[in-house]
Image 1 (spheres, helix red, strand yellow):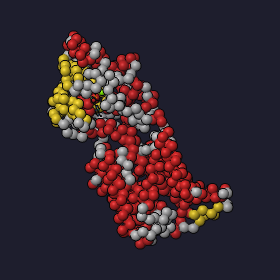
Image 2 (cartoon, protein in one colour):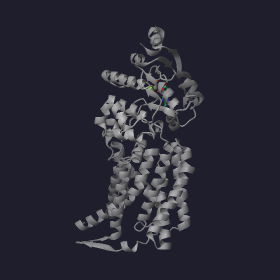
Image 3 (cartoon, each protein chain N blue to C red):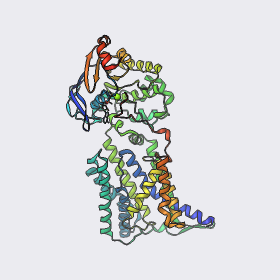
Image 4 (cartoon, protein in one colour):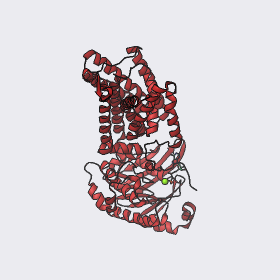
Length: 229
Length: 300
Ligand SMILES: Nc1ncnc2c1ncn2[C@@H]1O[C@H](COP(=O)(O)OP(=O)(O)O)[C@@H](O)[C@H]1O
Ligand SMILES: [Mg+2]
């Protein structure tokens, strides 16, 4: 579905991603773990074209997307759920869904609300008037309105209370069962491993581990050196 | 200073504020959406007023003057944006310099074409003269300005706050990057807003024509006033621009009459205070601000 081949991404002169390669197979959940500052968000931003890589290729369903504008990449079918949600404070919940609904999307506002019923009571609230869990629902719903086939989620549990984290876990399960391929970054290892089919670990802009969740659980060195657990 | 004087000056202030709003609204939206301090905006206003003056004098039709002003100015705005500003996307400083450059060039062009004598568009006949009400006499044209100004403000408010396209613009003001990542080609939005704002400035210039005496360099007199309005009202905040325009027009107007030597001070003192104590503007709800992800900061 999605393939990153040796990408290098910079912020001005600072060389942040130093040859990252990874793959997200169709219908699978792939987790990208790593400490704060490891380069997870930069990887997501590179995929979305927000900070395009200077070297390397990104293939989405076989098509090269590394030089495309963000809106084109999104329209190819990648739904982006940014770190910190980045909802729009001036828009109501309803507006978030209506404005970002793509023509011909199988996702109507009604279907989004049926999937995330808690948003129903919040339709006229603004993006910043929601609880953490509701915000995450809305961020996912907003991305779905574009009718994507893949979701790219950047630390969906950041800053959420433990109970809400579990709720978000169930949300992601739901979305996974709908058949989406998902790339998910996390700092919470257990949370990610419960959901993921495959795991990558990154540190200082490089991939330092790739394997099955079970393999990472058993690999004490990687856990200690790169994840601090 | 009696009550009559105050009422008349207030009405004057409101009509002046309505004209200022047509500058400030677009100026503020452009800043909010594209983060461009579009100083060229002031000269669009002046172009609008000179073009409408010329066409109005030539054809005798105020309406025709307005249409010509809107068309010519929007076209110039489109060229400046697509041909220049747009190519410098993401380079804030270059954009500011470019805007300043166009302000000088276009303002000088006005001087070259129209000369230095102050001009006023002839007031359309059905709007000249005054209305007497109780003890007051008030120029009809000023009342007309208030009516039209308020209508435009209401229409713009509905457009931005009640339509889907307006919501898209608001989300762009909140966070243009995320808008793009959600599949919207924000470049279209930029052009529409830039040219729309230019159009509005030209309408403002036309409407201001009969009561401001236009002269070259007026762009530069208006620039600090427009800045004061968007700072007081909050950048990118349409309602704020409206109230800000009224506030600034009132202060400016009363000071010009009562203490002309203080007129700049009287606007910039409140502006400076607001910058220090409430930088998001008086009319922006503080809680609406998002906490943006702090990039480049490492928690260890
Ligand atoms: N806008 C930016 N400008 C410069 N450096 C940045 C910027 N954003 C992130 N970085 C740097 O890039 C590195 C990776 O950051 P990031 O991708 O946000 O990591 P993560 O998401 O894994 O916490 C960090 O060293 C960070 O300081
Ligand atoms: Mg991150």
